[in-house]
Length: 235
Image (tube, rainbow, N blue to C red):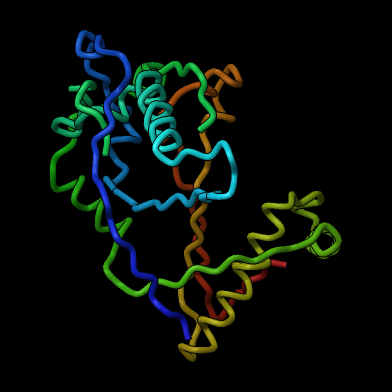
């Protein structure tokens, strides 16, 4: 039995960027993929050990250090401290927000994938396609190097003589998940596989968007539509 952990909030604070000059910056334009990605606010909890017996440990000093680090980070990644307007831009960077730090090229993504004026009904449809209220279960599968090597050998075919690790494991998991689904339903059904694809590595020239922030990814989709005349084979 899993016991619920009670959490007591002792303080709330909005951390603002360390620089006071961000209000002079031009609004940050969202890129096309930012517009099509539903807005989500996942909750994150970070655990830090309190080493009371350490002679140099000072809790107020540690909390101040974490706050200052976030404040300095928001100055570099200033869009994260602003507010979204009309799903087209981010402004009011000085307002604040309730990582290894790099110097990002923030405007590059919106210039490569300029925003569009999307009708609200299409944006609502994207939200519906991405998120549907239900009970979900996530699973984590770990394959060691030897198992992956054996699966890659079995997955070789004339069409794919050298399957990658991602191709091999994707097909292996999809094949067995589809078989389980068909066994439960009692009949074959159309199955859809979706992969999130990082677009940064696929730009020309390469690495041109490595320092950009934003949702620079899109979905790679495969549909398996079984029929009585053909046999689905995922190796």
